[in-house]
Amino acid sequence: MELSGAIWTGAASLGLIVSSAGVHAAVDPSKDPGTLASELWQPRLLPGQQGFVFTLYGAPAELDPLRQLVALMQEQKLGNGFDPGPAARAVNKPVFDYLATIGWPVIAYPGCADMQVNGGCVLAPEDEAALAALDAAGVFNAVQLGEWGYYFHNLACNEPWWRDVYGKDFDAHKHLMKPPGLAGYSRRPANRRECYEVLKDYFTSRNRALLNRTISVTGHSHYEAYAAEWGARCVGLEVGENIAFTQSKLAFARGASRQWQRPWSVQVSPWFAGACTTSGPLRQEGGGARGLDAGHSLSFYERMWLHGWFAGAAMVTPENSMAIFFEPAPRSSVLTAHGRKAVEVFRFTREHERGVPWTPVAIVLDHLAGYNAYMDKPWGILEPTVGDRETRDLFDHQLFPGSDHIHTPPDKTNPEVSYLRPTPYGESFDVLLTTATPEVLSAYPVILLAGDIEFDHRFLDALTQALRHGSRVLMGVRHQKTLGAEFESLNRRGSVAVLAPWINPETGRGTTISDQALGRLTREFLPIEVTGDPVEYQINRTARGWVVELVNNLGIIKRPDQPAVIDPQAVARVRLKPSNRSRSAVEWRSGQTHERPTQLQLTLGPGSTEFVEFIDR
Image (tube, rainbow, N blue to C red; front, side):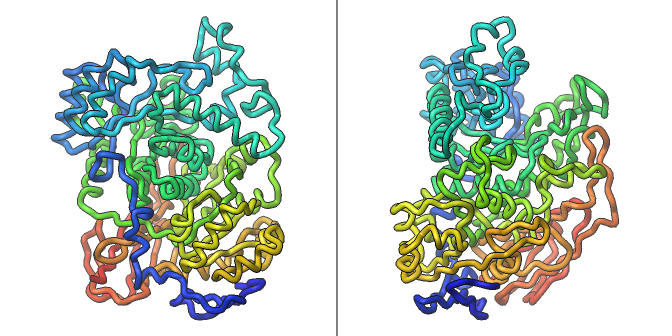
């Protein structure tokens, strides 16, 4: 790996860097897991909950059917929450009073189609009073503001959507629409600061209208850090559907959770190019395919539910599950294959300690970056700079290649294959903003600056403290030039490396960091080496050692309106080599154990997930 102003030594096990400041030892996670024990790194649970939450999507608003459903869920061990439950309206107070006695978290919709419109519905004090029993019992509850980034940039000027929402009252509300061509803004913003302030005003206004109880659920955007900053009770993601960039969105959400100490969640949507998974046989209905074989594959749901849990989410929501998990009436208590799989996944999450996601690299973007891969423009409207393009390429062509089916044609043979991708360097990254505190930055062995950065005094102070703590800072030549005389001052505080320019042969463009440097970071900071066929993988620290999640995302061919087809030849052969000696290793799903392994060979079937724990204590 080439560096300017610093030389990366060969002592990878110690994480050494030689610079003008001398030799510095970075965190060695295999010997010092103290960082992982920090509250900053622990997966943030929903307040009032003792563990991970797996919800049912949809709940009756009548007491007797709701009691029956709760009893069935408890009997079948089908989950421990509702997302959504009944609407956050005064009329549903008896239902919320009952749910308070169960202790399960409840997410509510506002009960109005214009929840995203600034100037739209506002919940009243009597609506808030309906939730009082949940508050008194310490049961987490929130009101969803869903897809607000997509609304702002795409629907705020979409007249057919407005007519559909308001119907005969459209003329009374059309003044709230935004002009076409401005991506939701009233006028063209001049810079990133203006974009930030407009979006902040929008979100905080909607949050107040929803009783300051918002759970933000973004799909077609990467605004997770801003939702956390602006007051969301939970930072939610919608994945599946037609949404791209699944894994980078998780990196943004987990980083936001750690930066702002808020829980994050994953909602897995069954919509897929007009088709939707529901119960019953495959059929054409409502303008698209419906049935258990419509929409996404059961394999994708299982992989996504498990990965959301392992990645540190406080809650995973299988969207539309009320209509998917049960056979059609009159046998509504009989579980479908999807319902039985949900029981299996929920049981698995309760039987295993997922540990703490080990993400040694913090990718730091400027506070005003406004990263938006879906629109391919900062804040959905500004023309991208060279720095913006480098950041996009880092996520889309290096860390999670093949995840963009919005700006590149989907795979015609298997359009589902882009939703979860093999990870050449593992799921080893969190995304933070330059507003991160020194304590948060110092928790990461490596801090990688990406895009255009404004080095204000607060951020420079945070970097300085992180360097003194032992973190390594990697930056580009552009960052060094922006720093000017401040660079030498920063460099004297610890391990600072300026990365030599590198052109990615795939894109023909300059990069934030080279593939070779990313490979070096992987070998240096991941306690388990993963080689062989391309797979998605993530490593967590547990009380007993390390556990690696291995996902073979190949071999399940799924079109929206057709049943999934399995390619039995699409197996992945993987070798695992721990960096330190282990007493034993356990494959969580197969149950196979290995004594004193120096390396393991595993074969993953099509669409399969395995977890291997290396026990060192």
